[in-house]
Length: 425
Image (cartoon, rainbow, N blue to C red; front, side):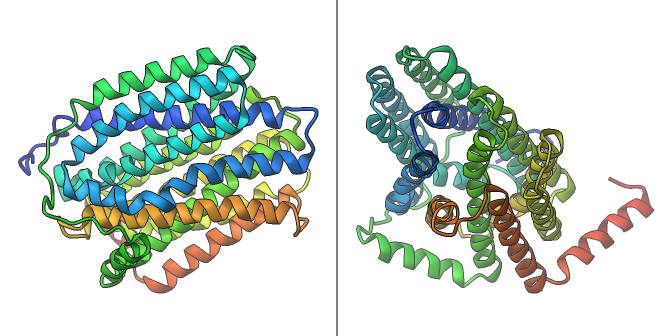
């Protein structure tokens, strides 16, 4: 741990940031490399395309539902650095499987590779989020999370572009795409060796093979802390909205704007860049503390942007601007929530809490994939109207935060006003 007077990040911080960036890039490059060609197919019906896009997202989420408690236990039982390094070694093997699946042009094997990358992320997430409060001062936590989320979504942007470009440029030669992703996994593994060394938080912790029982136990731990409990559900709502928007966006771009995969990537980039910028802005506005007051404005921006996105006859420039606004609101919303989830648990339960929060966030992601299928199928909603559903969920989340913490926003504004009057930082 650094001294309180040191303004610099601890040694190994940027190794963690790059490792997370590379993982986000590779996750999305592989996923969209598989999805984009299906969406562009002229032989599949709209229902088949909807089903495949939802299925790919659902398969990425399933490992989190099954193994999040195991990921949380590993993050507490062993050094979080060791867990992350082990996961990166596993990613090299997974990308080898992906290379074979792409070479054989077998959709089922490609979906299996996506599922395996979900397993990779399941074990990486609790260690990644759990290590931050162990090595950063409380005053650095919000800013550190802002940087982490910004680089994550830059990775998502570039990975989405890469997936579209590889899908078009290496059609029927996709084994090279798999080889490129395996090489990137090797680089990420090497960089991860420089992540800060930390001891195991609870080396005597026993593993509970009862998944539901372990999740229930961890949720009960969170429920004893009101702020932690609310942050947990806010985190779940964020991932539900973000996933539903992303799936619907891919379908909307293909059906309404008739865009090719590489052109669709620009829209995905607008959303991801908005979240990244909003996350970085939230880190700066927090000014060394967890700023609960940012959650309600963030949810409001998401709700308004969802309404705007669903407006009939929207042109591409206005649609892109609305996506960026939704992402900006999402960044403001999620950074204080993530900081609460990291800061409030005890040192011995940080991994367990992160595992439980991760599990519920992926319940939200899986629910979004199922919801997309139901809304565009049996409910007969248009893609425009699905965006309105996204905005409505964001509005409910913002309303709950405002109701449960009514003084957060006025206190934040009063603090800013006092700083402005003093002319201080």
